[in-house]
Amino acid sequence: MSFDAMPRNGDGELPLDEGAVREFVGYNLKRAYMVLYPAAQAAVAELDLRIPTFSGLSVIVRNPGIAPSELAERLSMERSNIVVVIDELETRELVTRTKSKTDRRRFALTATMRGKRLLDKAVAAIRRSEERLLQRLTAEEQAKLVELLNKIEAASTD
Amino acid sequence: MSFDAMPRNGDGELPLDEGAVREFVGYNLKRAYMVLYPAAQAAVAELDLRIPTFSGLSVIVRNPGIAPSELAERLSMERSNIVVVIDELETRELVTRTKSKTDRRRFALTATMRGKRLLDKAVAAIRRSEERLLQRLTAEEQAKLVELLNKIEAASTD
DNA sequence: TATTGTTATACTCTATAACTATA
DNA sequence: TATAGTTATAGAGTATAACAATA
Image (cartoon, rainbow over the protein chains, first blue to last red):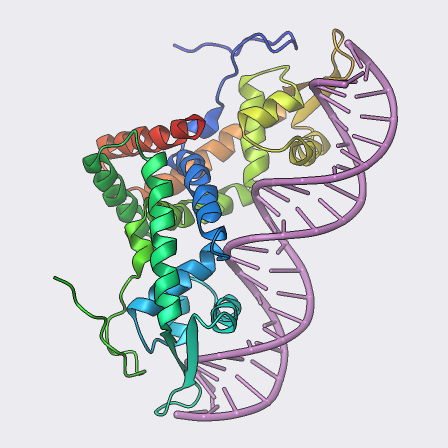
């Protein structure tokens, strides 16, 4: 059984149908992402960070000596775009770039104390943002959500 | 109890830590989105459609006579960007733009038979794409995922 | 030859400002 | 005065191509 769409009178009185897009997981994913992303963006903007720069810093802090190409792969970013991120971090003295001794093509990236401290602030800011926006989800639901999202991510290598 | 990050030797032998970004729902959301989105993009590209254009068509088909501004609100897009979408759809004769009689500022958008047929093909193409990428999720898991995503989306009005 | 870092450039989606015609 | 559609433009994130230095 099916229903034909009802013609509209142009006055906006009838409720709008969502359209076929709603059937897709990808669309629902995007709509949720568009809630969390701008909020996280605003949170780190107060610390003069962009999201890609924050992400880069967060990986460098946990992996002292990491090379730009490794960082790029870890974040699924292009090397050319990672360069810009590292430039930002180095200019602000949040990260140091030192030449590798074993392979002189490479750089070793290390977070400064200042970088670590700023990361802590940024993490706290995004946490506050997500806490507010994820209020309707229990801790179990949030864990389940991440689990399901990670299954999709893992499917990319199939 | 905590562990200090282990310094790297620069040869890429040690496994890389994910970084603090992984704790955030937003990051996991993005990673999953970056799997589904390019796949959907490739699917509709075979029909010479962009994702925003496909989305617009899908809403117009289900809401004959809808106005551009209503379409923009339904898809959370700017009116200025919706104009481009409608231009594409009208040029390809997938949608007709006719002046409203009750309010001459408005247009009534209606999908042509050709538009409806193309939408069916596009929907089928994205379905195939998602079926492949969501294989690791049961139907119940997919439903649960959408439910949780929609809770996040609903939080944007809090 | 292949890889690392780099630069320059282009592309997509999204956002903002200003204009016109109608209301 | 407010709204609908429109145009032009800018922004952010991402992607591609080419190059020098090094392996």
